[in-house]
Image (cartoon, rainbow, N blue to C red):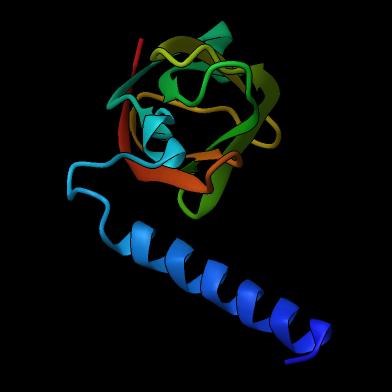
Length: 140
């Protein structure tokens, strides 16, 4: 057997042994990725109206891996004055702690003023691509 063919057989054997050892790992073995913190975002169910409808304070909870950076966007939309809409957005870069972080986000109206009642809210955490969206009750 020449040297090149011997090297190829040795490399193939090493690769096969590596796969075999990986397959024989115990079922409880944990990969590095399973140590990461789950990424979550949760939009509160009640928000607080302020400044005569110019701003709504919305509670949001975020969890992501310690030391990571995430971009959080919160938006609100509410039907007002018959068929008009009050809308607003808030966005910010966050530094993740690995623990659940709680924020009171000030969403400013960009068109019509918000009012008491139902609105539709959406929280989008761009690290991990998680979204929570649902109806929110706006109260004074």
